[in-house]
Image 1 (cartoon, rainbow, N blue to C red):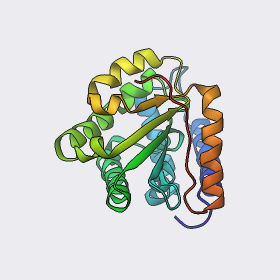
Image 2 (spheres, rainbow, N blue to C red):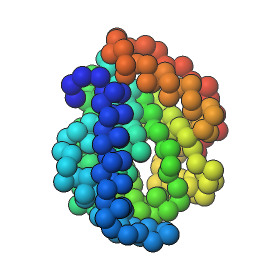
Image 3 (cartoon, helix red, strand yellow):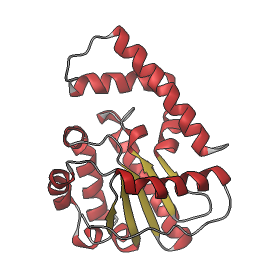
Length: 211
């Protein structure tokens, strides 16, 4: 992805929000929008913004480092069932490149707005990715240094119970969770790294509870 990825992501989210607002204005939704309504809205985004741009803004390798940043707030705007296989293969490729280059990788996940209903909506791709890693890419479990999860939702215990069984013990013990307040500083660090595009800067995070 060319240019400043942080600025591009902000601009992209603004474009996406405009598209979503236009779609919602033209298509009435109920008080609780259905899963299909959300997917239809995502398809509307895909008609205007190319998939490569969306993928690059969803999972970004921080400059000159083994740190990857996954942004759920972008993912949810375009991820439809038809794209699950493509998204999974893209993620696998990015992680494998980090492992091949650095021998390890560290994952940073922004779960802002994630919920129990979101888990059920995207459960197929979560299970697909989990199965693929457990079957063909167990090296991902071994080479993962830490998985930082930011903006952990208030329903974390319920979500942990749902996701936990899909993660092998070796991964669960590497998960560090941050509530909204604790997420601000590390996410700002990531933002600054993406802005400067300088050589790798060590990311230091405090240990919190495991998943």
